[in-house]
Structures are given as structure tokens and as C-alpha cells.
Amino acid sequence: MTSTFPDISISTERLVLRALDEDDVPSLAAMMNDEQVGAWTDVPQPYTEDAARTWITEYAPTERTAGRGLDLAVTEFLTQRLVGIVQLAKTNWHVRSTELSYVIAPWARGEGYASEAALATARWLFRDQKFERIELRTAADNTASQQVAQKIGCISEGVLRNACIAHTRTEDGRWVDVRTDFIVWSLLPEDLDGVGDQLADTGGFTSFSDWN
Image 1 (tube, rainbow, N blue to C red):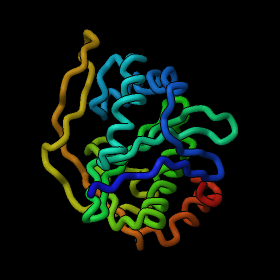
Image 2: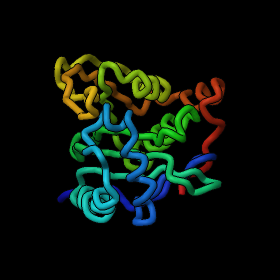
Image 3: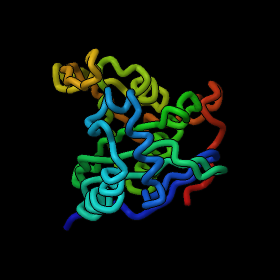
């Protein structure tokens, strides 16, 4: 029997993580057209509103009901503005493990939202869903993503050589593929001890409220 993630909402002091809905189409399309997203993900460029609508109405619901993963919109609590995405994929329900990734909109970077959203998701996975392992993979030169992994307590396990395809722009504006390494990170339940306090001390965020 296939297990599935519930249709849930997770709250922190500043953020609400919830299912994507069609009202997110314009903001999602704008976020995915960012240069950094184009460089470090396989999201097609340019990214259209039709593509965003297909993700929200077809891809994300199918992934959840099939038990493969979960796509969560990251929104500001006060403004309800879409500031990012957290995605769970390649979920193994027997091993109780999943792969976590995140994208933050260019206008919302530098606020600690990626760390806050990723940590909230990890706590929910470990406490409510009884998961035992979360895996992250970051391109070798994607230092911003690596900093998020370190902030939430991930341990670097090694390097998958030549396993990642990043992208760069040519002088005429075309995107071309560039092969690079993947750094593999893992997070276990015991790795979260004290992480929230450390982030608060460094100004990452303050505190978490109860889960919705």
C-alpha cells in the first residue's frame, strides 16, 4: 500500500507553508524566471504561466497522491506573498526518507526564509511523519544552498562527481548545460537538537509557533 503525505499547512512565526493554488500562478512564474533558478535547477527557461499552472494543478497533486513527494508554497504570514517553494521528492516510505529542495524568490533572499522553511519542514517530517532521514543535494558551486543546509544542521556525506547539470548563459543569451559535482547532505532527527536556538542567536529567525 502506497503512503502519501497529508494535505497540510505548517506555520512558523514569519511563514506559512501550504499547498500551491492557482492564485500562485503569476508569482510562481515570476520566481522561476530568475537567473539563479535558471542556473541551478532544470526548470525550463523562460518559465511561462502555463507551465506554472500545470505544476500547480497537475504535477504537484499527482506527486502527492502517488506518494512520491510534496510541493509546498512558502508564504509570508503577514502579507501572504509567495516567497518560495519547498519540495519533497524521491520519497521512500519503507526507509522513511525523502529528498528536500528549496527555491526562494530573488526579492525575498537574505531574510533567512530558506532556512526557516526547510527547518520547519524537517521538524514536521521527523515529528509528525516519523521520517528517519532527509537528503539534500547541492551543486558544488551553489554556496547559498550549501549555507542553508549547514544552518539547519545537515551533515555533508560526500561528493557525487560529475552528477549535476547546472546552466550558464552564453554571450548571445542562450542557456547551455555545464556538468559539475553534487554535494550530498543528510539530516537525521538527532541533528536538529539545538538548531532552532542557534539560528535565533545568529538572527536567522526567532521562534516557531505550533504546527497547524
